[in-house]
Image (cartoon, rainbow, N blue to C red; front, side, top):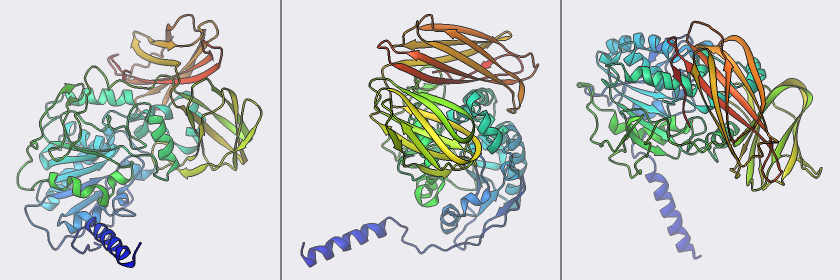
Amino acid sequence: MSIQRKLLVCTLAAGLALSAFPSQAFMAPATPAVAASPGAWAAGQTPANGSADKPVILFVHGLTSQAKVWYENNDMYEYAYNNGYQTAFINMYDISGTPEDMWKDGELLAAKIKEISQYFGKKIVIVAHSKGGVDTESALVRYNAYPYVNRVITLSTPHHGSQLADLAYSSWAGWLADLVGSQSPGTNSLQTSNMTYFRTEMAKDPDVNKVPFYTLSGNKWSGSGKSSYTFGGAYLALFGSNDGVVTTESALRPNSTLIQMGPWNHATVRTGSYTFDLFKSYIGNAGVRAAALSSASVGSSVYGDVYTSPSSSLPTVDMSGSGLAASTNYGQYYVRGGEYKGTATETLTVEDHVKSITLDWITNQPIDELRLISPQGKVRHVQISTDRDEEIFKGAYHQVTELKNPEAGEWQVQAVSHQSGAYLMTAIYAPGTEKAHMNASFSGQSLDMTINTHGLDTEQTTLTSKVEYYDAQGKRIAPAAESHRSLSANSVEESLPVPDSGQASNYVITTDVEGKTATGAPYKRTLIKSVYVDAAGHTYSQQD
């Protein structure tokens, strides 16, 4: 390539690079001083280019997070400031170390919304990340803070829960949860069944749509460099596109406008340089309560109306039918957990036609080595990626690897550590031909399960179900119940008694399927289902 041509290419590249950033010089505003206590908030620096017609933006953080997530290692505050917006940042109960549910957070947030609005003398706009969007809806609808808010923008909020929260309360996760504290009222509230109940409660409240909501959702978890997102993304991929923590379907709130679904993970979706310019035009003015944007309703489902942004070329999202859109999760993961001292060993089965297995060994502290032993006895010393979770399993370490085109048969997984601790192993299978899935409901004093299978030898397959009993806050209310039976047919019904607690309860069923495929290959999978029962005995569960 000639020197002149090289210079031209460099000049074009430099021009393209510069065009990706705002033309104005960005100023770094002073860092807010938000006290480390629930409900503490602080105003950001007043921008020189602000105006009375611009609303105040209140930033609300998500699960296990805190106010500084918006301005430490994040330019969201800087973008808001340089665009002339006054800002405020708040700490929820997560700052205390024990995340609370959306009801307790919502009550706290409602009082602070009124206080912040009165402080600035105008209505506010809320930008909320993850669970912060659920807390915000609770504050506006259940605790009547809607008169002080013009509109809400949610960034990857699990409006219908996260299957990772279901996993955190499965029977195999207990050992790890005891050490890292991943079972909190906040995490419990994000189980898919609990959020099904929440959506029902919101839908029947007359104030549910008095403030318009706008949403963004991420669909890129691969290549993020975070092992926790690699695991979460692979696990949630069985349920649809996602950002490593929340599926794009779950991020769609009923009767809301989808601004954009884009290539963000659960962290970049709340980063200013990634998304602020996309939702800036939706912030609106301070003087009047915002009306819904002109994007049209294109269908209806359990979500309510489904929207696409007028500036977006996104296709219409099809969510017709009951429950969430049809899940692809048919027995494609296998879960085990427990204590370890030195070396822990688990067995993976691989049937024919499995393209790959994403394996995550989650522990309360990093392990020294992970080994895979093939059915022929060949030992593989695995190169693992490790990082610490900051979301559902906050404080735990993910050790992730991928097994491509694995040999059929039984594999041994060995994790070696010089320390003692607890682990949760999750193997996520690229779909094979064999399938199993489970639904459950509550009737009277029993939990009724239906387990359907396809491609398994019914005479050589067994089902072991274990039910964990929790109250509405995620505290255990009775010892787990367990049943063991043979797979006598492709569809099996099972009932287990539940304790008479006299209160709203949450039941998490973990069913292990173990046997052989129709061709004689060994087969092991895990099914997890969350069921919420309100005080009146009504059942809420996300249906596949």
